[in-house]
Length: 448
Image (tube, rainbow, N blue to C red; front, side):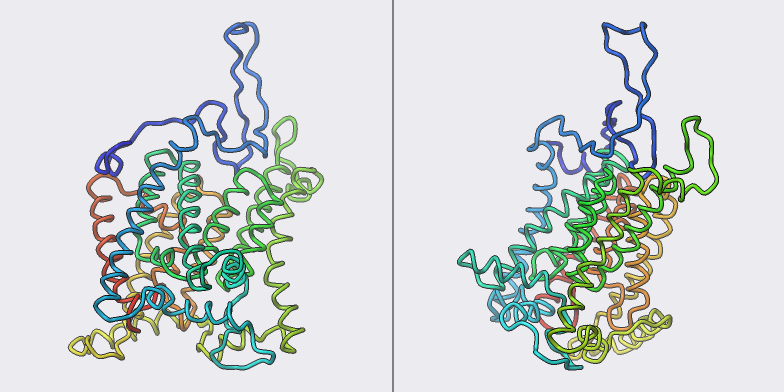
């Protein structure tokens, strides 16, 4: 395995094999070279890449996962040291540290479920069910408690998300970019959620898996994964327009080319007449089913399908507003003006974190747009909708956790920076991960 400095600053020059798929969000022709025995006897044949073509593993499974596993375990070990030191310093148990903030509500939801009536205050109704259901299921088949089960799900899910994000980066760019993306993804401050009982440990592997499935035109699988996403977190509704964008792209590309390669009128309508084109509709049709099923359950259980929305709106003051970004910066400036009271227990660093996150996100979105010919339409759609939701959120600014959800934006930053610039990025991000994690595990000044 290459050393860390080499991985951070070296282009490995690994090229995809001639038969490997390039960018699956575009229809393309794959050149199939003739065998050596038939060389010169026939011209190279041309065929469309199969939608079922899976990633090749030329060097074996261990070679594929060794680098992501090494980086991921190293960052989890660092956070483990942080949480142990934090718990010894303040006298809290390790379980209480990793279930801070939303983890308390997920643990309560796994224990007690939802109230039998709609309450417009802070209750478990403010959280979607799939993650606590997974916590409860794992605790029933293992000796782990609900909280420990949630932590284990987040840890394993974080590693799976790291693998899938690396696969996406390798598909869009190359092996060197994939390694940089994996390092940045693991040391980004928002990755603390993989070491806490937070639903992103389940959401992000499913969302990344959905994007990767659409890359390989596995539309039904993508739809199932998307449906699971929409039963985990409100931000997961971004997967619905992402699936719609991928399906529209597929229909357009299949409709605009005939046997002669000429453009035709009504490409999308023509794409609907193509069997493979129609299969792409599985993804957007299945995607909202998780949220719909939860709404039906709430309707039967509490009398209204909007019980969760009302709990968030009133209990957590969660609302969408075009002035949310201005409010975030205004509150951040107010906090900085009272910097001499930083030790006060009522200090709120979330607006300072959100302001820096907003600047970072806008720069990353600009880089993502410049990469629109390489990054899939689904990934761009997912990122833009996550950005829209968080930029207009009154109560949840662009904190590290929301930026981690917009992981294609992080990926383009890691792809763009190389050498010394990338090492500076990783160094600063690592320091922020340690400091912000220590504040998050204990206290109320900074949430994930």
